[in-house]
Amino acid sequence: MSVQLFHRTTCRLCDSPKVELVVKLQPIPLSENYCNDAETGRSAARYPVDLYMCADCGHVHQLDVIDSKSLWDAYTYYSGDAKGMPEHFRQVAAQIIKDYAPPAGSLVIDIGSNDGSLLRPFKEAGHAVLGIDPAREIARMATEAGLETLPELMSLDLARKIRQQRGPASVVCMFNAFAHADNMGEIAESIREMLADDGIFVFECQYLLDIIDRVLIATIFHEHMSHHSMVSLTKFFDLHGLEFVSVERVPIQHGSLVGVVQLKGGKRSQDASVRRLLDLEVSRGLDKTATLKQFAGVIGSLRERISGLAAKWKEEGVLVAGYGAARSGPTLISQLGLTGAIDFIVDDHPQKVGRYSSGDGIPIVPTSELCQRMPKYTVILAWVHAAKIVESNQEYLKKGGTFVILCPEPQLVTLDARLNV
Image 1 (cartoon, rainbow, N blue to C red):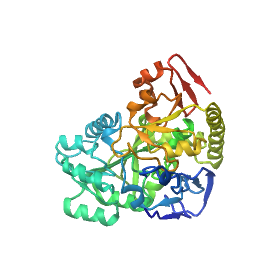
Image 2 (image 1 turned 30 degrees about the vertical axis):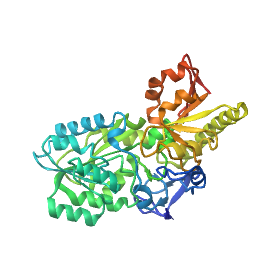
Image 3 (image 1 turned 45 degrees about the vertical axis):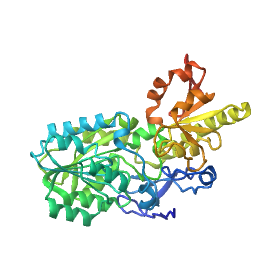
Image 4 (image 1 turned 90 degrees about the vertical axis):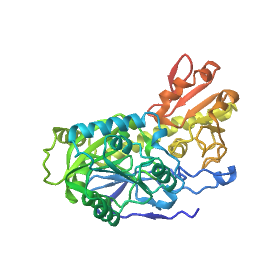
């Protein structure tokens, strides 16, 4: 696979050239690039994921951009398979319908719709639905399941075509994809083009304040080009004729924002939640480079502690596993000094089992082998599901195994104890 990489020199949201490196990180391989043999995995190229901050709007983002084909063609993440995600989407859809009463039968569009899990409850409520997602295989499967999905990247040309053919949308959504686009200005213009005059744009993204407070470094990989805050998003939407109606912090992905946006000057008044969160960000210095540089120091300290653990495991000669061939795996392994420390990864995804991780060439085997091989330590790479993984693998703990939780504080979890490292 030929990967194209280019380095932006301006802010993704406001196009300012005043961007400063604030968090220097280790380069990582592509997270969804599983290999057929260990050697290919070990020789996989690595690409930067350093974080930069814009001095003009405060946006925090990666400036090194991987071409979309390399990111999405072999994508293996399915929303419907993620624990708790379908239920979350049903709750979101129900809340949108309750609070904003989109007209019966009106069009609902989801950008980055994946397998259509968010669109399904809207369709069941009688709305016309349309998904847009560049992962061709996932888009095909969603369409076959009755949720029409265009296998394309969002663009202004596509937005105009959709409006011309299908009319305006009462709701446009972009959940867990609002951080995935480099052309954010065009995305905003596309949303404005597709929205009805009284329509709403609803998005969900991981929240920069939670990333810092909870040390969610596992959310930093190539697909996640932006790490959003209210300070920068408010300015961004204003540039494109849009404005916040409300915002809510939610626990999904250990800390996300759900924002509701309308055309500027729309009929809805702005909820007090917007001002409260803006004030909180200013009080926490979320628009200051010093805050992000302090975060870089926290990551460095965490790396020292965990790499020390890995060195100890090597001295002891013990077997070490990883749990979950997750998108976050390459980030956690690379940033926290675990390169070369993990002997195998357990996972049950049919497109991953029997293959090898990119970067380390670690073999991926079924989760049933965890208790058969009985590694002394098992590092939880599927960090979002750490509590569930521990709960569901009591047999491993009863046999003397130890789970390792990496963030925000490294912990060793045995059957009888949970110890900070």
